[in-house]
Structures are given as structure tokens and as C-alpha cells.
Amino acid sequence: MNPSSEEKIVESWSKNASPWVTAVRGERIESRKLATNNAIVDAVLSRSAHSVLDIGCGEGWLVRELTARAMHVVGVDAVPSPIEYAQDTGGGSFHVVSYEEIASGVLESSFDVAVCNFSLLGKTSVEELFNAAPSLLNPRGALIVQTLHPVTACGDLPYQDGWREGSWDGFHSDFTDPAPWYFRTLESWVSLFRNSGFRLFEMREPLHPKTQKPASVIFIAELAADKGC
Image (cartoon, rainbow, N blue to C red; front, side):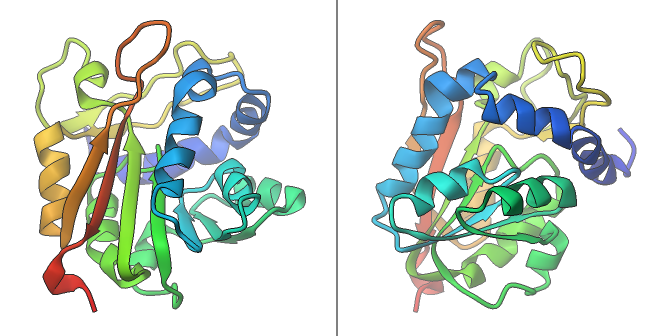
């Protein structure tokens, strides 16, 4: 896949912002409704956090859920349209910020938790974001990532890192031009955390109640001892 894949991710989500908001707010995505939404909320609550940064927040549902639990939550996304929906709805603080801008240090605040909920699709952009993540966290802070489970998401393709074609299979016909995404094995995810200054504290595998297969994987990582304050 050509080097413009990172740009195509943002282009795709810009085109599909409106149908995505409709799908999320209408609870039309079964796996989210039955498993993964509650799973990521529970993961953040397990940290007893007071402040949270939601990276790739989309239309802001997770920000609103956590704000309702008396947390101070900031949501950022590289695509302006979902942020506009989020700001109109309220329930948190929302800003248009790209992953590259986060990596460059544009965010001056620090948080108890930084969470990425199905929002890490690229290669270089994700690696740069991980490298910057320690600077976003307070002492004893945590980075929490929910993503497609590599074992179930691999399909019939080789179980190895690499770019994959996107798909809107199972979604409404309003969705177009699916975003490419960079597949990582479990081993690669673990290495990414370690190489970025984190210690993987916990890994959760929420099961889809109908299929009894992993609907996702959730990584909960803390700053390594030599990265803390």
C-alpha cells in the first residue's frame, strides 16, 4: 500500500463523519452496544482517574460518559466534523488536534489517563503518538488502548504486521471509501508499549456475547519506572 495511507485515513473519516455519528448515537454497531463500549468505560474507571484525554474522540460519546462520572475529560480528534458534532452536544471539552500535533507537544496539560478507543489506525502516526504519550501523563498515569483483536481481525491474511484494506461490511450504504489501517500482531502491540516507555499492566479481551469470540483487546499500560516522576 502506498505511503499516502496515513492521509487516506483522515480523508475517509472526514467523508464518513455524518453516517458515523448517526451509527454511534443510534447504537447501530452491535459489538459496541453489546461489549466494547462498556469495556472501555470500565477500563478507564479501573484507574480511579480524575482527568482523562480521549485521543481520537470522534463525536464524543466516551467523553460524555466519563464526564457524567465526575471526571474532567478533554476530547481531541484530527477530523473537524465530528468535533463540531461533539461541541454542539456538549458534555466535555473538545478540540481539533492531529496526532502529529500531539506528537509535537501542542497539548500543554497532563492527565491521569490517555485513552485511545478504536482510534489507532495508522503506522507512523501511531508510533509518533506513543513516543509522545509519556509527556501527556501525570505520575502513575496510564495509557489505555482498545483496538481490534489481532487474532480475530487477521482473517485469512498472514499474521504479520502490515497495511490492510478497510471495509464497511455490515454498515449502512451511506459509508464510502473505507480507511486503510495498519495491522499489528499482539507481539507488536506489546513491543510498541515497551519501546515507548510503558509497562503493560493489564490486557483485557472483551467477548462478544453472541459469538463468544474476542470483540476487541484492551491494553492498560503504566509509565515505566524510569519514565515516572
